Length: 411
Image (cartoon, rainbow, N blue to C red):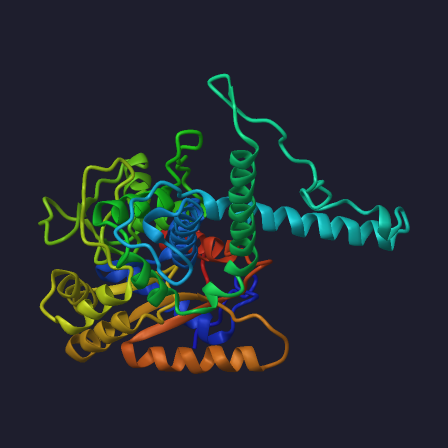
């Protein structure tokens, strides 16, 4: 067995290092493809799949609370609103920032208390917890006409009810709703939103396209290293399981032309980017079926002769594929990989993060998962996370490119 230059791969075990060398040799000698998951888009500032579902769910519950507060069509706690139009889409960002601020304040108070700089009773208060609830608006006017005391009282009661409901949503959302099956929750919510508003909501929560905060696309280091791999390897196809086209625009900025192919659209030229789960372009103008909720995944599993299934089968049967930013836990993807491996037995490669934790158990769990991937023809390359960062993946892709170019040697 060739001896590796471990100075470049000190944190990879022998199997991962061997698989990396095999990947490099494959890229040099045969046509390859790349499969992209949410991790790639997340590196460019877009939400992960789980965060996308959280945003969708939070938006619906905000609308539900609004309807309750405004007595809309007799809506109450036991009657979820249906056929609704979407107006609020930024609530989850506010919740996320609020939780982050709360955590920072708690950490600051804890640090100050440990250093005896302040007494616990003098700690920084969180947001409006010292707000005087007895301080009420005494007078309200509309067009110069003063409201009656009864109208003011009813208005304040309604405001208090809405505030209480929103506070309950904020405090219970992360610990209650999101403990449910996210895919199932998304399905239940989609069933109660108008179709055109569902598409609007998906686009809003994906790109955060708000008037005061437009989406700013910047090529991430991870995306840049992936582009360099594409430039220096014989990459014919990219299977993009994300909905966005950030990789397409990133390639375009680097002077590399790929065709965007979705919903049966034919490629004008090779190479191509395929979107088996649907396509939501940054610039809009295209509406496709989006595979996000339970029913849509069931359709992909039950209807074998779908364009999305066929393009995946063709890609994995005819080329060696490099999986980036994917957990490889999706049942439909595993079904397709099993079918393609039975047909052609191509060798594929997956970059996966090492599981965190102390002792040998995390490594044992990874080894069990990796051994199972071998039945699909997938060789795993496990890399460590540094504080939750996938920086090491970027470095490994850069090393791969340099070896392909002949600028480095691993043996």
